[in-house]
Image 1 (tube, one colour):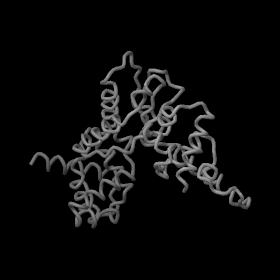
Image 2 (cartoon, helix red, strand yellow):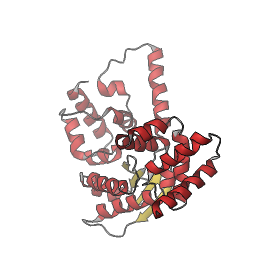
Image 3 (tube, helix red, strand yellow):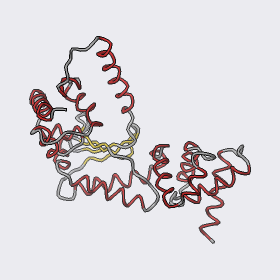
Image 4 (cartoon, helix red, strand yellow):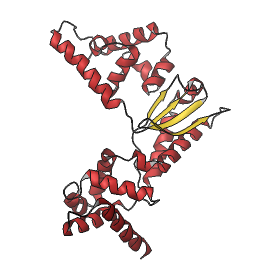
Length: 273
């Protein structure tokens, strides 16, 4: 990929849309400094951002990357086919932080990224893995409004009456609380796989021997969601896996509701002992 060509193209297309670097960076979810480096040909974006950049600037990837457009019709069709599937893959995000126009300056530097990292670290102490947060502006919101959204479900919304140095901290604190309060909704099999993969480093025999063999990611996710909805922590994930594995070795036909009940009972006995 020609960095100079890419930089010139993205700069030209951005200006054609009368967008500032700050506005485009906010919509993509990167810092203005990163976008500036792209436009100067000093670096390139992560490939996972390419589809969104093309959508915002209304340009095909071939033109943006400087790839010859002299392709057979079938390949052209395949390119549009991939755009459709990409949009379908990304139409439901596990976690988004969206905001109105007046709040764009709050996210113009890297500060918010560090604050989100701090929230991820805090939640990790309670056994919760925060998914990647998509941060973007939304023109349809009130200019002073921000929302925390998961799979298009609004978890939290607020219209701020004042802005200051602590605004970013406050919004990220709200993000952390929203994740904590709605984790049963946010949790999915991909997150559960990441949690168990990480746990396997410490408990290779326990986790590797049970997940995803006797305990599928789907079953483990459903049991964890049941525990969370009951107000229980999933910080004891290794004990949950141990109990589930023991029960399923005796009977693989145990209903999910019964599994969740047994896990809860055994966990309470373990915690109180």
